Each structure stands twice: as structure tokens, then as C-alpha cells.
Amino acid sequence: METRKIEIPVIAELFARGEKPEYLFWVGCAGAYDDRYKKVARAFTKILVHLNVSFAVLGKEETCTGDPARRAGNEMLFQMQALQNIEKFKAYEIKKVITICPHCYNTFKNEYPDLGADFEVISYIDIINRYIDEGKLKVDTQKFAKTLITYHDPCYLGRANGIYEEPRAILKKLGGNFVEMERNRSFALCCGAGGAQMFKEAEKGNKEVFLERMEDVMQVNPDIIATACPFCMTMMTDGIKYKNQEGKMQNLDIAELIAESLNL
Image 1 (cartoon, rainbow, N blue to C red):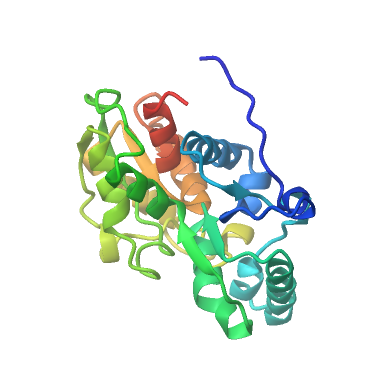
Image 2 (image 1 turned 90 degrees about the vertical axis):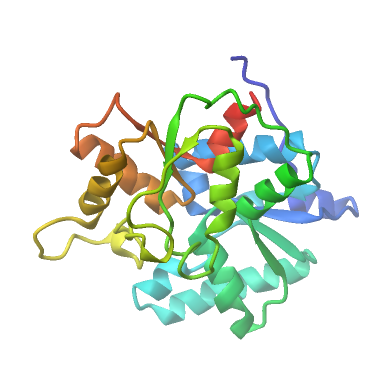
């Protein structure tokens, strides 16, 4: 498939011209630095461009939300990061932020207001689901017609923010065969990387959390594990390798599935 070059608007350049986008697309650390999750950021960007959504990114001005620092116990660093971001958002008069990472979403939505933030936070899952419902995203229901898909609930979308039905609605609209794991929604098992666990050595125990979760996956034996979080993607992809399931199943983000369905 031919790769089409897309120009991504940077908010500083728009602001200098007196223009203001409707949304700031917050790429996040994973979308900017992790080679695997860069593909998710690209997929969602293609969806935004396809929909002709008014958006821009911070580009080199974007920093971390501070979520890992707070989870690891460094409250001072978290507040420094948060206050810096809040001031930047105010300077650019940003009122709506779209995130592709549930950790960024949760931190912006539930923790930044305590420090004076005043902007709307929207998950990319909500954006995709809304545009499908409005008929503006017309997915090819034949693309995954013979594909068995399961969904792993990210902790910070599900238990932390109650976003359970929207990702499932999207996957069902793709036209594939959707199957639930036994532990799902509020009973879903964590991938094992949240709470800054991604950045530290495993603690003593009999089994890694992600391997336990992969055993849940293997019970339903899907073709695709759909995820909606960079941490979950890393752990599920590792789980596929550790359990020797490469060639049998793959891990794709919901944005990637939608972009593929639209042939973007």
C-alpha cells in the first residue's frame, strides 16, 4: 500500500498566524518515542486527517504529563511537569485535548484540575466511536469478517474512568467475530505495567502478571488482541512472544484496526 505523506500542524505555528485548532492532539511519550506505538500515533493521525478534524500537536514543546513520576512516588516532579503543561495550555488557549494513552487521559482528566487546569479531555476511543455513530467514519465491515478479535481492558480506561462499552462497540462495528475473555471489564486483569511497574524490575513472585493475562487470551484463542494503551500493547506483545503465539495471533491497537479498515 502506498504511504501518503501527511503534514501535521504544530500549534505554535498556527498560533503565530492567529489560528487556533479545535483540538490539541497529545501524542504522549509512547507515541513520540516507542517505535511500536509510533505506528498507533500515525494511525490515529491519519484518521483525524481523513475526518478533516481541526487539530494540532505541540511537537517539540510536548513533555511528559508526569504520570509515571507520581506513580513512582516523586510528587514534586509530577507537580513541576503538570504546572508546566497547564501554563503552556493556557498560553495557547487550549480548551480540548485528545489523548491516545489512558495514563495521559486519566492524569489530565482527574489530577490536573487540582492544580488549576481547565480543559476538556477526550479519549481517542470516544472520538472514533462518535464519528462511526455519526456516519462520518465508514468502516469496511468485510475487512475483518473472518477474524476473531478479543479486547484487553486498560486499567486507566476501564476501572479508572468507566470506558468499557465504547471500545467494544467499535470492535463490533468492524464486523469481525468479537469474543470476550473470561475476565473482562471491571474484572479484567492488569497487563502488569501500570503504576510505574514498566520502569522497574519485577518483584518476587511465581508468575509475571502479563503471562497470567496471556493465559486468559489463549483460552479464547483470538486472531487479534485489540488494545488501547501503550503499556498494554508492550505487555501483550511480549506475552505473545513468551507464549510462542507469534504467527497465530497479533496485537493491534483499535486505531490501527480502524485505519486498516479505512485503507488509510
